[in-house]
Image 1: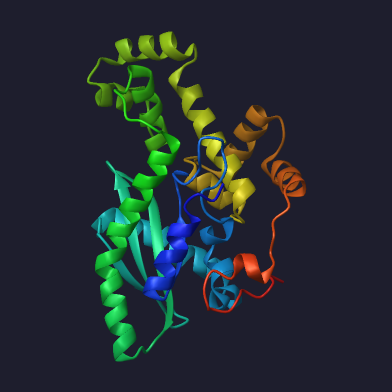
Image 2 (image 1 turned 135 degrees about the vertical axis):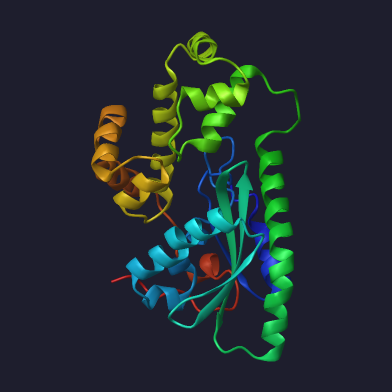
Length: 278
């Protein structure tokens, strides 16, 4: 558990910043389903005191949905982000094919910044994308101890894993495999004994469970990030697949998990801790 946490702490100490991330495809989950980093890192509001006081709706819209749309359009290597509260941070989005799968953020500074801080921000602008890719490579190494030739079954699983939050069909998988749709349907049935649509739904629900367990995202936000057309559709499919509502699942999982919130554990650097949410 928390295998990558020492790397993040070393980076923070060397660069004088704090790191948070949006792990849209759960690339920092190890083979046993545990997180490789502290769960607080997935929330600006739990990492930065200024974000804890800000409007949640604005923060989620600005730092997640608007940001995701922007980088998916521009495919920028790294960005310097500003918000209406005068906060500045550096971010590096990571793509796999057409999918935006991960973002790492470094910050937080108040505008205006002095010359030394400006120099640091520009250095991070160049360095952060390299660190992000290295971090994900290390996460992949942890999940798989040795490289080997990918099988057809693993290729199908990887395609679904990389694209679960997009609107995809058997035709898209067929194009990826360079096969006909009918042949692709036959292979999916042969290897998984279930149709493509069910495989996709199971992948989406699997990610939804991780979001419910490890984040404070709202139901409509989780539905959007997991590729569902609406929160009603998400609730209906989740209940049918998991046998309970998303809200009941989150309540049960949170009740069975105890997270340490002492200052020693969550003080990732010298910045003040978040205030408790009201």
